[in-house]
Length: 235
Length: 235
Image 1: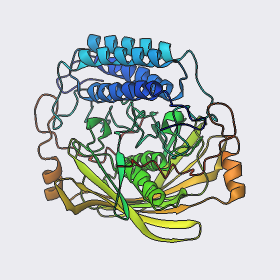
Image 2 (image 1 turned 135 degrees about the vertical axis):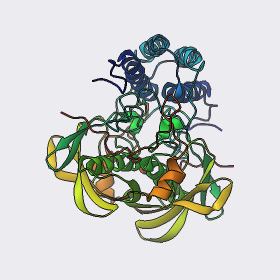
Image 3 (image 1 turned 180 degrees about the vertical axis):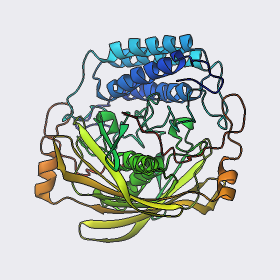
């Protein structure tokens, strides 16, 4: 893979960011399930603050995309559902599958709502991303205009899950995408159904929303796919 | 405040867990916006792994509630939206307000979907919690059966937001709750509308879902409010 200037990009910054996110995910889960004494928890907090001190030295403004984002393929590494470098993301690794997309993920106790089950809003969060990714996989994109979830059965934590989405209909700037959540071991038994309407903003709206966005070098970089719809692994 | 045995509870474990979550939230945000060199990011990851080593020594099983949860008031400290000890949570601090509930929060770049805007699924996640909290504030509870969101305008990151929810209707085990997201500085201009149907599971279902849940001492503790609906600050 080469960048615009034909040079081989330095992969270490992304590898380091991914390493930190991986370590943070483990610590976040441990912070929820640990039963060690309060003194140990305080010591862990001190280590976390020492880590923050190292990172706080320089930051990008919110209007500036990360240098790690590869806008060419629309992949955003800090996406809070699918981003390899996001500590909030499980992460859900989304792949093309037939006409749609599929992803497997296991959500830990940190994602719990009712005891032993995934928070209902977490199911909504993941499915919004899956629906948008299905739009991207079909060459469409847009921002979520409407999202609807039907919760048929509770979704257990610490259990391999499978997420699916595909295009139901589309016309002009508007796409309707449907999807499901199931256990990986019984993929036909649907736990949650999702349906989203995604709308590509008109040029004047896209300009109003994203006109000030720049890439890491400060050059204007309004997203071509504002919904981050194309954050799909090519496999 | 006293516990079942009439003794004053030790507040340090919750204070320590809250301290760790607060430190983790800052580090998660910095991990997304930092522009320091990869070597510094790797060093931060090492510190995070050292923190994990301290916490990994002892953990509770998923069926066992945290000793920090006060089941008497239904507050769950690790809830991924409202929990003071959840690093995933902004946290959204929910208060009673008239007939419903209200919360203010600012979501950082870690919660971003399209550049400079909150991920649509994050809005869904927060609103699912608000709607459930409104049910709890009205003395109702239930698990999300249906959730619907209408996205009228994008929700900016790094901007104070106000979230509201209140009961629209309820009959028997079923409640319909509606809510909104707006900017704190223009609360009448609605950015996102939400509507949820919450259903209290029948006793046999509640037993099937939560029959194996225990408190920290191993005693059966099936939640009276499975939707964590009562995680409201009394102010």
